[in-house]
Image 1 (tube, rainbow, N blue to C red):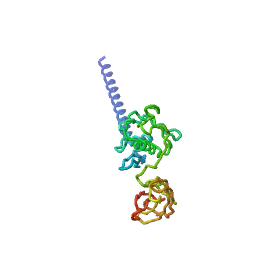
Image 2: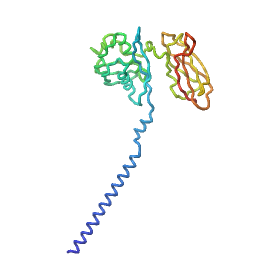
Image 3: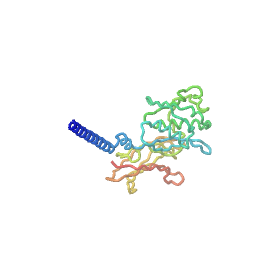
Image 4: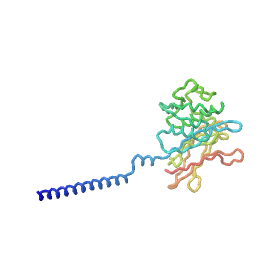
Length: 286
């Protein structure tokens, strides 16, 4: 009986050691796997980090001594799929904005080129006067219609377009919706270029596109290599100031074998003939 108890005790001890050994082994494997997984970057996070930032043209109202007008600025934001909403957040939060800072975007629906922007009721608290109202509406519309999938814009307030919402800020109102882009009151900058984009690999000939409000409507372009040597020049005409007009032109050139270049788009001063309103865009050779 005593011998049997001793045997049982030995078996129990062996079983206990076996359980501990198995548990330690499983724990070590689990820890090892966790360590390996910790070294593997999250694929979605890595992809997001590799996505380029987005350069957004945004339009703000500026009040001059004798007139009010729009200015165009490029704002860089982290990559997002909700670009229209991000553009509206820039418009609301920037210190130059005439939109009340507590304005919220309740939703943006884009369908067949029409963007319907649903604002919270705080948007109606702006106090900008009649000229500021028209330009404030146009600042939103011009900003959103810069996006390739938006051609027209409709405003809502808490999902409605009637009643107080229809009066908007009290002068222009929402009576003629949908709104479309209008650059006629964009006074600054005098020139902007929409193609090519910075650091783009350019083709031959180099296609140039943009908008200008310049003396006699003459827009000039000059392509330089990395040493400042002129590779090619060209010019075109559009509507003369004070009218803004779109422009397009192309430049034929022999691309260098390496390095980067600079495209300069500008007009000449009517006072002294010097280049002014220069837009410099770094480009890469094909």
